Amino acid sequence: MLDGETPLQAAGRELREETGLVGTFPNLSAVQGVPAGLLGYEEHLAGSKGLHMNFVFVADVETRVVLPNQEFEAFRWVSLEDGPWNQAPNNVRDFAVLALRARRVQF
Image (tube, rainbow, N blue to C red; front, side, top):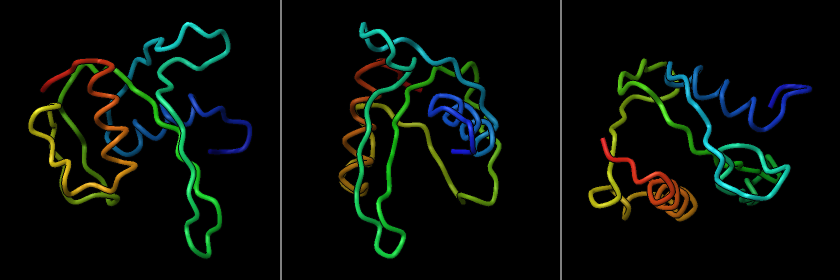
């Protein structure tokens, strides 16, 4: 996150910077004060970098057109049924499944 940026603002910025997509973040919680789109949070030690914190957000997007950048070489849209879940790290797999269940989105 940038200085002064909320996790929700960071999620929107990162989505745009890394994919070119603009997202609308749905309310997933009835608890007042929980940012729109926040699905969960996890943290783990990342070697010499110390504590790594992942805030996981769900966003609805209006297009499937992704604008690749230098941060990734390939991507694909997945459904709950056909995702490559056995190839993903546990934290990525678990949050991807939760996100897809939360929105029941399939491309």
